Amino acid sequence: CLQITSFTLVMWSKQHFRSCNLWFASNAGNPVYMYEFGYRAAVHKGSRPTFVKADHGDDVGFVFGGCFWSGIVKMIEDEQHCLTIMKYWANFVRAGSPNGPGLVAWPQYDRQKQEYMELDVKQTVRQKLKKDRVHFATVILPQKVEILFYTSASNEWHDPL
Image (tube, rainbow, N blue to C red; front, side, top):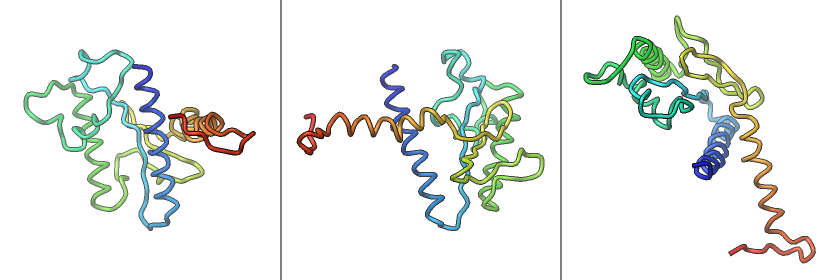
């Protein structure tokens, strides 16, 4: 599990941040908003370890009103969170910005500040998502790989396979 988690972290974080930074840097004229979904819905409370808050894709059900589908185990907090997420996404689709009345202001992604919205029990603006892990995946690991496969004495790249 640790190996898969580490691999996923490296692959996800590197590509995720590279995507946000490239999109932002492209001057495409469209705003970029970044988030981390960490809300643990009632339906998952008995099926996941306590340290797991949200898994990949858990946000999709909230975006499309999954808390209001029949047969879904839910709590009042789930419904409130679902309404909040639906408002953010509807505002973004309508106006190009997730912000609206009664919602915590969600800042546009900026390469320097790297602000993102933490979508959990409460919505909180934070900076530099998983900063240390991203630095490892985007800076330290590539340096280590280069050192591992490059022999300075011969100035040749050696394929490990």
